[in-house]
Length: 44
Image (cartoon, rainbow, N blue to C red; front, top):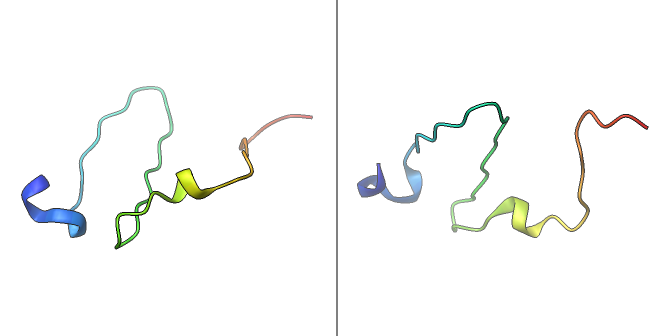
């Protein structure tokens, strides 16, 4: 739905991969700003 701009709901189809996309109201990519990589569910 690109005609709705940044306030739009974007539909993204992904198979066999949990995906989260976080962009704020200024178009900044949250994950690009994270400096410490984190793996969820990692076993030590």
